[in-house]
Length: 280
Image 1 (cartoon, rainbow, N blue to C red):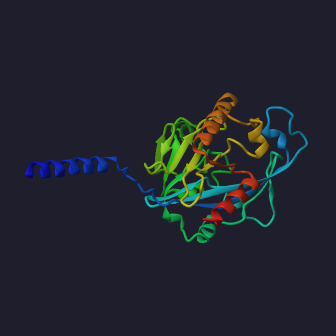
Image 2 (image 1 turned 90 degrees about the vertical axis):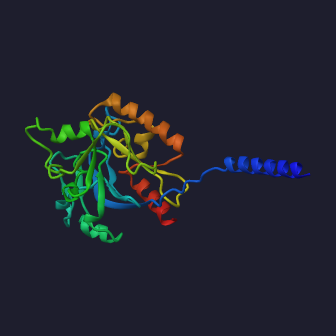
Image 3 (image 1 turned 180 degrees about the vertical axis):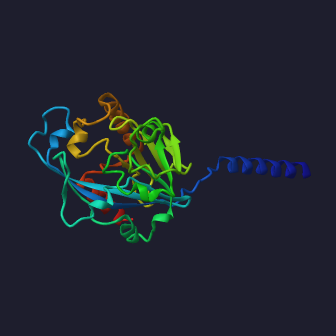
């Protein structure tokens, strides 16, 4: 009788262990917040520069110039830097090429106050690329670690250059990366290497707590919705072939992640993201 009882207890113990082994370990994702801020207004007077041909000749278009703040338990990240603060002026400025009419609504410090942050609250700073409408207040982020593709860094600040990009020259706390980069090491915020617009252009993937879909910020891979549908490549891109390859990789990744694609210069996308973030 005692043997039967011991056998029964042993059997129950084995079954219990097997059931315990089958339990899945649930890893709780960190809380990630996303804020969208306005780094400027860009009225394009000659839209044809956003094509390799005459597709948009005679057309104009209003762009926004957003930048973004990502809040994570391991530190804050700023993505892009809008237009220079010298463009916080009463009337829009018509820049010399005759292509853009530009203006910035307010300073970085004042805009950060609206989300209860200060310039010194950032651990990381990254830009999609180094054009003037994305590097505006970059110099103010000198205490954060700048996450930049090594080839983009060399193109702007290499020791061999006679003239360096003045908007970036004060950024000395640098982490040079090559390819995709998981900012916090947990998959929630990933820089994706998408060259073509510039030599080291990159986009940003963010898993925002409370949103049904992750957010995928395009940088300047696309500038407006039709541009994305038709895979239009601006005349001033660094490399056309690389741009088209990046577009294909981007769309594959976006589909794989079922991501909400936000075209950073699009007023339509700006409003869409604003509505999504307000629902959190």
